[in-house]
Length: 178
Ligand code: AMP
Image (cartoon, rainbow, N blue to C red; front, side, top):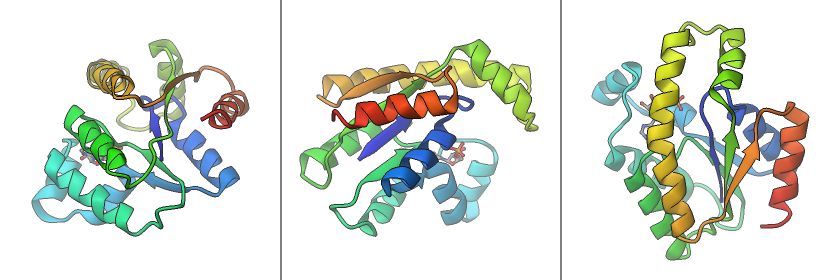
């Protein structure tokens, strides 16, 4: 299993797709899965931009992973987003369910992300909300990466301010080594 971490605008979606297509891996985007899966109260919370409870999201990831043959590689995008989610994932790996090969962290500065998102010009990509997203991302992701590393998971910080081809090459080179 390969984890893909990075803020919106870091190129996570693009790189996840390129890596999965080239290497013929599964690509699980939690945002897509949640949009496909949830109804009722959960959907309401999703639409309000709130994270689902850890128990709820873990149940969904668990179900999706059960549909994938154990020997096939998976790129997971959008999970873990909290420490309890990361703890669950590492526990599953330790129990032998899959191998946590690496967490690919796409590192881009606030300015680079801002330029890309404003360019993309989605309705929720206004400057204020970008700043807020960046603050939240730093607050939530830094402890997860630190914890993964302390648990023995390889964490790779890639320079995501390069062109998409350059970033892709850097990630591929790293994947050859883990
Ligand atoms: P995204 O497209 O990645 O922003 O995800 C869309 C929505 O799905 C989020 O706003 C959350 O409601 C839900 N979601 C996706 N991934 C997670 C996660 N790891 N933990 C909790 N909720 C999640």
